[in-house]
Amino acid sequence: MKKPSNIIIVGAGLSGLYTALCLDKHYNITILAKTNYEDSNSNLAQGGIAAEMNSEPVNLKTHIDDTLKAGHYQNRVEAVKVLVEEAKDNIELLRKFNVTFDENSIGELSTTMEGGHSTSRILHCGGDATGKTMIKALYEAVMKCENITLLQSVMAVDILRKNNIIYGINAVDLNKNMYTFYANDIILATGGIGGIYASTTNDPISTGDGIAMAYRAGAIIEKMAFVQFHPTAFYDTKEIHPNQFFLISEALRGEGAILRNIENEAFMKKYHQDGDLAPRDVVSQAIHREMYDTWCDYVFLDTTHLERKKLQKRFPTIDRFLTIHGYKLGENMIPVRPVAHFSVGGIFTDINGETSIPHLYAVGECASTGVHGANRLASNSLLECVVFGRRIANNINIKIQKPSIKVPKNHLVVNHDYPYGPVRKKLRHLMDEFAGIVRTKAGLLKVKDELLNMEKSLKAYPNNTIAYYETINMVTVAQLVISDALNRPESIGCHFRLD
Ligand SMILES: Cc1cc2nc3c(=O)[nH]c(=O)nc-3n(C[C@H](O)[C@H](O)[C@H](O)COP(=O)(O)OP(=O)(O)OC[C@H]3O[C@@H](n4cnc5c(N)ncnc54)[C@H](O)[C@@H]3O)c2cc1C
Image (tube, rainbow, N blue to C red; front, top):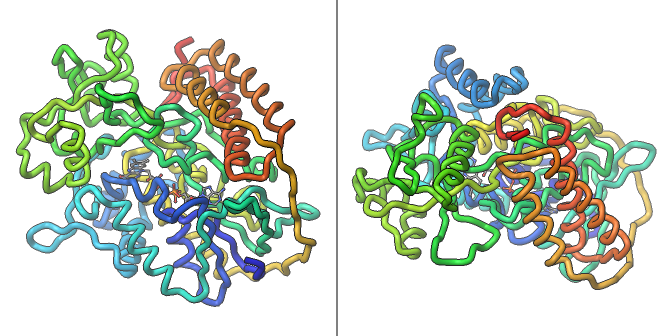
């Protein structure tokens, strides 16, 4: 653990692993994962990866237009063009790393539709196991690289700087040991922020650590108000809910599933001309409205008119999960509701993934490349991980390295036990209630005050544990969401102000 490294990558999801594989082999690369490498949002991704494989300008333009439209034209156009135009090359590179995409009966790549896409351009793996398939293949590729070390159960805590030059990070392990990792370049690939909400599809690692670390280091953070709610998380009417909800992929609606309220009314056409395939922000807000009007905590996803065998083959993971919970695709109405899903905003980056701090990069869900605008188009996020991950690697590969600065090892030895469970629970419920799909100034101000109190008491009782640093990060990230939401009195995309 003491070896000096040229490059540190914080995060072993799709963006972290893929970026590592694209960097030149002469670099000494260390990847940190907070828990096991399989714990990530990437591993949970079902539906697929949006990629226009036909490079005719008209096809590329349609994907660009769909992305801009879903993002309410708040996107950075240059970044969207990069995303779409570099998709095909990155899919080909993923295949070289042994990622197997599903094919049709004549050996062509299979594609499907999803909300907001005007053509069928979503590639998928293992039916609905796209993320798992990718992570498995990339992990195996990383394990074969002698220049890459993957350290699991080590949490990055803060970025180290001297005279405004970054030189490494400090980190803590499960035994409360602190480490310093020196690096010329640091790549944050820490994923999303779903963990600050009581109801989310995200893996519990998603506590916004990279965003909080970058913020403390002085990097520009933007668009945090735009938290995307996935319209169709499974709502188990028989059980008390865990924090993490199981996702029912949008691709099911792409294959013909219909949303109905509890009075059996198919309601989406009332809200948008594309009906069930409207962009996510529209669908989540429509479901929220229907739940309110029918005094119910959920609506139904109806697949009863679709062929069960075909659905089983296309969605094996979802089918297995629902069967365990007493529902069958193609036979039963499935209760669903919107929950927090994706962080559109994050650490500002340029089109090469570089943040406002030189040599500090951000990629994947923790980054704000500008591609999503005010609302992400379905399946564009896996694409964002690979397109911008490769750009970061290419950018570092051609750059002359700055000399590394030697600084004494930094040990933090403090210990106070404090029950973080109740703090996290309170924070998550406040975020669900006042910073969820529908927001008001009064509600946001209430959370702001509560967060300030939490911050004060956490800082008064520091503790050298992963749980402590995560909780501090959750408070910081929640504060960033609230302050951005307060600064946006207008409703747009994922951000809906009732007042
Ligand atoms: C249920 C679900 C389904 C989805 N389906 C799709 C889909 O079909 N298509 C699509 O395009 N997108 C989908 N998404 C979104 C997409 O999966 C994510 O946006 C994307 O995978 C994020 O990848 P990432 O590499 O940025 O982060 P993640 O894959 O979440 O990886 C984050 C990594 O960072 C590590 N980490 C975090 N903090 C620290 C720290 N302090 N120190 C050390 N390590 C740290 C974690 O351990 C983990 O290894 C889905 C998301 C979810 C939750």
